[in-house]
Image (tube, rainbow, N blue to C red; front, side):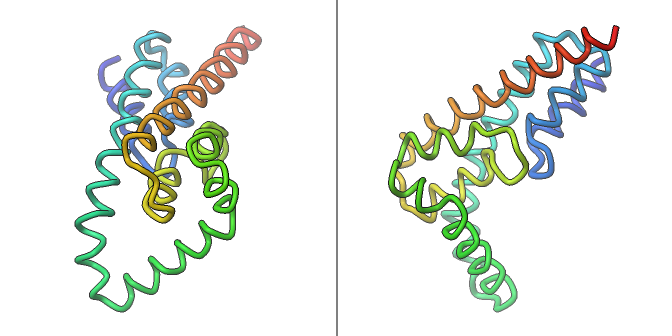
Length: 152
């Protein structure tokens, strides 16, 4: 059970799944549904400060290399063309709703990049990301729970 919880938390900090994958994984492995919810939620929320540190410090250092800089510019353009205008226009609420949508490409990683690109105040952005992650996790947790009950 502990191993399954750790794997669920690792999925929750992964940019390839976040809590959208971690919560269902843990629940389907038989981990207590409340423990897996809170562990994956906390793991996913912790991504924001790590991403801010990366974007503020490491990103500036890595931009010296042409390949990295070119990739970073591509990601920035893609983010601004996607939901960027809504996030920029609605600020806190736009960021919260963007992070809340439980679909691939939305979540704390994208929310952190949006915070950096649109120069959103970090305290407000952390709150928006945390609330968005919480609401997304509730949607995923509830959907998984109802699906599991329907299967039994």
